[in-house]
Length: 302
Image 1 (spheres, helix red, strand yellow):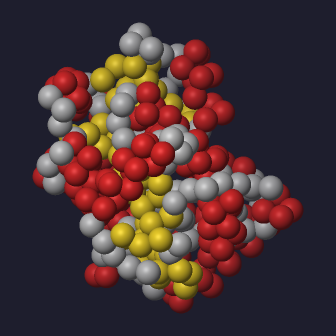
Image 2 (cartoon, helix red, strand yellow):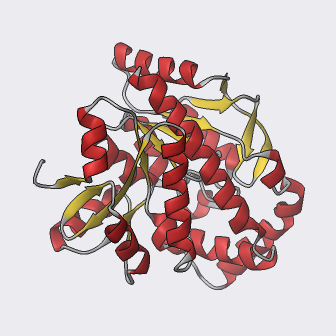
């Protein structure tokens, strides 16, 4: 395993000193926005983790190794790379074995974080049950990963383009704790309130860290999802987005877009229809999640 995992000097030093580390995914860099905005955002998210008292560990697959923490040069190389694989649990080993470059989704980042001994991971929003899944069976591997891999994931809920009631039902069936941070409502990515209740609520990073430790003590498999609402000043109300999401879904169906291609298509459609507001909100919520994840990691480290 030591031959497969390459930690950056910063991450290695933090782990050796028992200091808090926060894992970060890389698909937001390779599949979320164009260069150089992707690089600027990645650097800003890493800086937000540092300013909150933890060490960032951006995860990716490069040159046949699991990279945990990227140097400045490696981060820029990933931001400029083309034909990067979007990796989940099913693709991770193939990408490693073939020596290709891959960016990690929520599921793959959780796997690598756990292998590297990192307990907290910040992302934008998790994947979930897609609308129309009763016909397509399109359900993200993120949900199963949350049930199996013991990492606390900080996200702004699940992406609003999904079927949120079904997503929560599947998480409940899988035994995944879904914790609303500081509010009773389950957030919907760009919006603070999805209209659904969060199954659980905790109000401090220390309480979330205590819950993480207790799951380990009980021998319970899997992690926990911390649903952290986007800051009020950055949100786009659900009522504004709802008709646009319906329109985007109809376009995807009409064009025969399926599988992994659905989410990027929908996000690009919404970006265009909102004149970029969804992307700005996305950046704001990722930064907010990074700061909370750092506070949780600090509580765990203490």
